[in-house]
Image 1 (cartoon, each protein chain N blue to C red):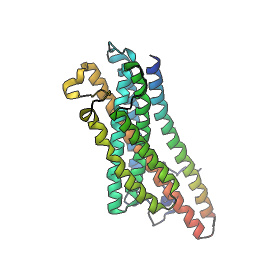
Image 2 (cartoon, each protein chain N blue to C red):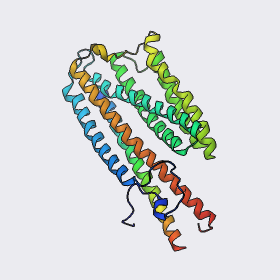
Image 3 (tube, helix red, strand yellow):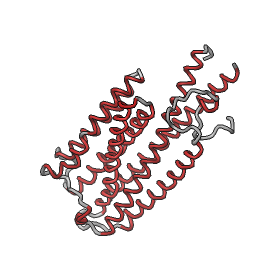
Image 4 (cartoon, each protein chain N blue to C red):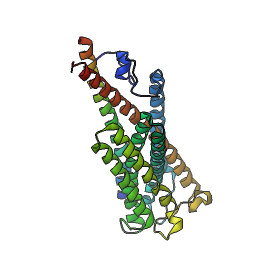
Amino acid sequence: MDSSWREGDTGEQRLGATSRVDQGLEIGGAGKRVWLERGLGLAALVSFVVALLAALLYAPTEQTMGHAQRIFYFHVPSAWIAFVAFFVVCAASILFLWKRERKWDILAVSSAELGVLFASLVLITGPLWAKTAWGIWWVWDARLTATLVLWLIYVGYLMLRAYVEEPERRARLSAVLGIVGAVDIPFIVLSVQWWRTQHPSLILTQSGGLEPEMVQTLMVALLSFSLVYVYLLLRRVRLERTRDSLEAMKQRLDSEGGY
Amino acid sequence: MVYLGVAYGIIVAAILGYTLRLRLNERSCRKQMEALYESLSDQ
């Protein structure tokens, strides 16, 4: 392995190629980007450990539900990040359809994958909390059902990307689905106000009945999950760009008949 | 307490697992690029 092969380098950089697969993204700033990623990764890790300790040791035990209530400190941030991630998919998809630049498609698919990851965590931790709070795993109320629909839409988005082979068509179709899917987000957020749902509504401005230590723990967890999301998003974007570079190299070798 | 342990365990495992997956995929891509680069250099 060549020692000059730095994390963040693309194959095209090494080859000194003039064409740029990763349009619009700074190739010269690869070193800075790697350091930014490492700093973010460290901050995400530290904040995650702090959030975990705060949720387990600092936040008081809720009287009715006991320790199971502590699931809330990671369930709510998971939901928050899932919504942010799908909003980013929507925004990046709009920009892709408008500008037709690959970088927006990369951002959309990267954020969609993370959105599905965090939405999965919401759908797993929610029933674990509900079993203790309500005595049942699941109810088909507006918020829970709409969240499941959102998850299914973006799982469909990832499946669409996996099955459509032609890159331009894949990007265009998935951009449309990415935009349409995000329509479900305000529906989920406002569902507890529009309908009588079993899911509790959390209103932090009125403290929502939470102790100050509980609110502080939730805030630390929200910060931690936000850092984890940004860190993983940067890494996922870089992976997609590396795949693009690899594909470009393969095509170049194919065209030269050397591979 | 069991549900709390399961929930936290799944969250930690999912985030660490996804991070590991990204690292492995990127390493795999880089190795393939290295091999292609070598074959280009040989030409």
